[in-house]
Length: 206
Ligand code: TMP
Image 1 (spheres, rainbow, N blue to C red):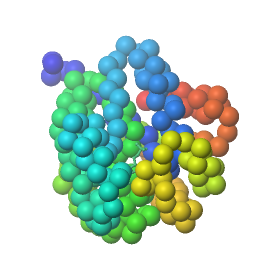
Image 2 (tube, rainbow, N blue to C red):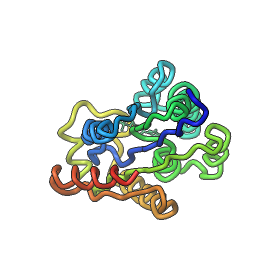
Image 3 (cartoon, helix red, strand yellow):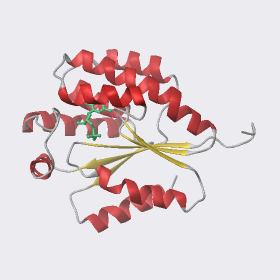
Image 4 (cartoon, rainbow, N blue to C red):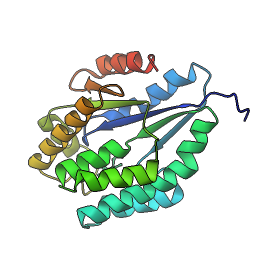
């Protein structure tokens, strides 16, 4: 790569389980590709061979919330080193289905892990790396829970109760308020076509 080549952009998708974020990934990839840029679509936990193995443990095994936090960041370290940073360096757009905001929402907001501990891990694992844009798909708790009840066999997080989901939603909305420059909150409780247009409009700004 030439030194003068532009660094890529890092876009993350967030929201409670059942908020519908993953449905929009193919459209976002297509919208970005029309610009002729390379798009790397990935996810957390996961995105690498080791990360996918950790994902299986994280989504199905019961563990202490701090163990969960440490494993999330272990997977993230691998993901950043092997996928995210190399792609950004060569000018690609990286689209990640979840990143560190999910740790603040799930492990801190919903499970009570100290935000200071998460901040320390964030600094250690990410350095200065932060998403350039984060789309938060927001729906009322009843809607996400109804969507989940009709989906495939639920994982450990998807089996949590309404109280957990309410804490999760509030934690995400607080994160968005605290980081207004990179967050865009999308009301995902409307017709899919409308959400699609909203998403396309936001993507066109980056
Ligand atoms: P997904 O099904 O949306 O891909 O997400 C996997 C699950 O992992 C989801 O329930 C949220 C959870 N998760 C965390 O609890 N903390 C994290 O840091 C990440 C990235 C995901």
